[in-house]
Amino acid sequence: MQRTLSWTLSILFHAVVAMGLLHSVNLPPLPEMELMEVELTDIQEPEPIIPMPAPAPAPEPPAAQPPPEELPAAAPLPMDKTVVLDDAPPEPAPAPEPEPAPEPEPEPEVVEISPTKTLPPEKTAEDGLPEKIYVRKDSTVHRGAEARFGRALMGDYFSYSAQEFSGQFRTKDDRVISIIDARNTKYGRFLIYDSKNKTLRRLKQAFGKYVYTIGPSAYADEPVTGSVTFLAKNDRIERFILVTDEDRIAHYPVKVHVREEEVSFDGPAGPIEARLSRPPYDEGHAGVVVVHGPECADPGLVQAFTRTLSMHDLSALTFTPRGCAAEQPAPAGPGELIEDTSAAYGFLKAHPSIGADKAGIWGAGPGVPAALQAAEQASPRFLICMLTDGLTPADLPNRKTLARLEPPVLWLVTGRETAKWRSLVRTLESLRDQEKRPFTIVVAPAKTSREVLEAEGGQSSWVEQVADDHASLAVSWINSLDRPKAEQ
Image 1 (cartoon, rainbow, N blue to C red):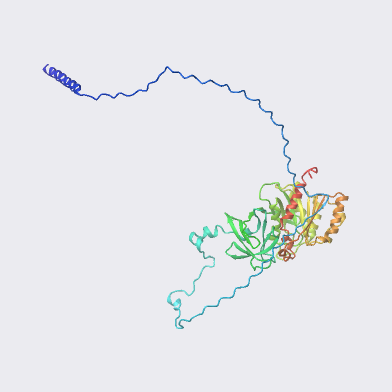
Image 2: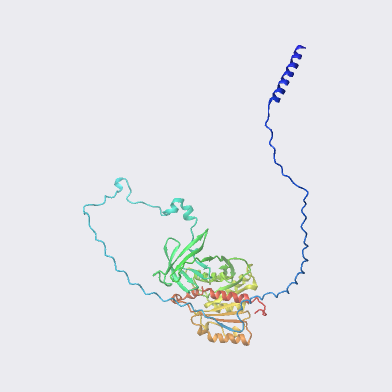
């Protein structure tokens, strides 16, 4: 009881003391804050609302303009006229006058120091060292990047065959540069043909594997007139650097990678090995069997011609005449060539990428007579006869045989001796005008440069035919065959 009373008194005492202390504290008075006074007696009158004017009626739409007239398409070659083309090359620039040779500098005097001073004697096998250093014959000494990073990575992985260098290359201004593999011919080198300057010159390996110098002609290596440096991309040659005396700047032609494959088909005397060249992309292109005559032509020269055709969207099938694959080439003759040409045409028109409605025969030079006889038997969709200097008018059939030709024929008279074909041209014009034969006649004299004229020989016509002017002309004529007569 006493304890409870003492706790109660203690609590009351402390409460009284706390209240006394609170009242003894004097707090500073709060400052009076100025308040914004707002008078609500004046009311601002609202601005009058001005109504917007009524919208004007929309103008009537203008009368429909007639569609712009399309540009007329390039006119195809006429079937009732003879076209004469001028293929003259540009005139060469005058050669600059040679500068006088500088006087030779005097040789410095040689002072002999002492005849008694000699080099230390070489160590021999008696001293414990071999006299010679033997290197394995199946190994190759590598330097630079190949030595630092390994032969497998830098030496062998990107090792390109020299066959990759040949092909068709195109510049930005549609200038075509042809690299021809003529190493197994009388030329003995790679050849470079320029479609702009119409020059044919020789390439010589300078140093390394990808740098070549350009000679002044097809037979000489010096004096050097330029250089070619091949450039690779991944696993194939993609372009090269071209530097010549005719150009002020370097060019970088890009390679046109046509599709090439080895094929085989049945012939009258057994299987025939052939090569099919097709354009780089797509399917359904027109195709031709190229007949170059009964003689054995070098595959590298023929390949340069077929690649030109494929670059212009035309497939080309070539085969080796009988007897040319033997160790001692002995061509069989024109009769066997006609039979093999007919068999080749049967294979080409059955190919899934071409078809019978787009397959024809192309006779080049000495191959024209065989192409005419094969066309009479096989009845192709079209026929192209390229008359060159390697052929004479006496090699062609008579008027009666020419009158039996049913397919459309493009007679392309070219070379440097076109005057000898005047009588044949008159005969063809008579058949075209009087007997309504579908003949297109084009006379295109080949006024080539001095380099090409100096390359005369039994197979030089293949080199001259690398010019892509004839290929583009023939492709344009083939495409016009599918157009309706009203468009022609």
